[in-house]
Amino acid sequence: QVQLVESGGGLVQAGGSLTLSCAGSGRPFSNYAMGWFRQGPGKEREFVATISWSGSAIYYSDSVKGRFIISRDNAKNTVYLQMNSLKPGGTAVYYCAADCFVGASISADDYDIWGQGTQVTVST
Image (tube, rainbow, N blue to C red):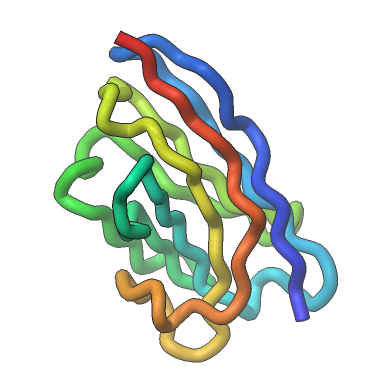
């Protein structure tokens, strides 16, 4: 199965931008829908964005719609999350995940493979 490694996290001021990457290795990346989730301090893991295997279906949570952009490059086995106009509430560990069966789901339960996460801290 595919293994996932996130990168690109760090400290950013509110209003700034950051781009996360999630690199897959192992099985062909293009077989999977990919999602981004986040878990803030003391909070439940929440859906951020998802993209189908072909990129034809994309969904965002209401909290990030219009500010975040998810994309993928199957040739590079990588999915990206461009985060703009970051807010302090965006401080969280961000996880990418692969969905083998359902396709572009907003439910964490539908994702089969998870990365270790990358920390994003938004300062005021």
